[in-house]
Image (tube, rainbow, N blue to C red; front, side, top):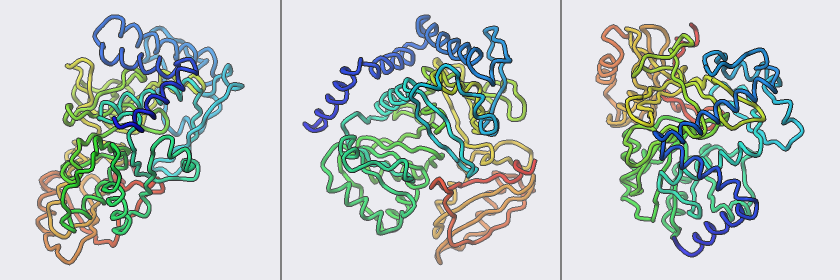
Length: 434
């Protein structure tokens, strides 16, 4: 690490030491649990964290007080964003309400805000999670971080705080050719050790621009690239690795909880699950029972550390598959939100990444696949004058969706961003109607 990076690294942990090493204790706990998963002592810690948050919730919250806990998580209900929103105050612990708290607001794809309250200890746990999982992706405290996301007013940092944290904020809402050029020049002229974190769809825009201008690889001391919030298609991942000469991983997290899972440069497409801070269940798509091993299901999260607002058995709305044959169990697939997961005409889930296959056709700028009914699909395409392969694409997608699929191609000038600054590559209107 360079001198200024070393100073930032040392000062960060020194300040934590002066505050009682509370962050370091969380970091050590995460490290021990995840790296010694099969030891009895690791199992005992995980069970203690789970039992403690459940007993606290039943004893101190209006929502959970009507339930009893007999060491079986299944005795408690599965909740979702709508329940959290409608019964918001019932989830607050009566022992924590006078203590200092923090709030985070999420809208996701719904556009309806949901406010989650966190206590100080939960905030520290989230920070420790970020440090641990960032290191798995080759990023360390002190490195320069280029952060590509929608920067709302409450998220924007002052110049001084940005300098202290060594963060360069990059806005996704104005990601045009001119601003991409500015980002590239910033990277090339910055000699520090660097990392990238940002929306997968924003990376896609950058890579397609670099493809279009036939850009050459950049050797600029980038150590880490992390994609968040959306699924990263394989073509964009390969382009990022080519242009920026750094390993690329995807991180699965949400605003309600924190980092739930992440890939590493060695894990290929599998995700390391954060069993230290969460208990994860995969439930059947339609019923509140465990999905069969190896089958996709709803990702349901119990947060082990938010004592201010206990969130137990929270249906994230995302679909995933866990492999329990390895220890610790890992995600082999994370498909994204249930409303973004598509089904073929036989009712079988198809990978959302099928939309990435259109990247190999000349002239395609953007695409979005929408399921309208069991057999009807709309493929929105933003193309240039080079594109002339509509029939080939329809036939290819019938191979994924079914020979009896009815695919309508609609040409548009833009696939719009959501309010969150993300862009959906797949949409399931059929699920919404059901």
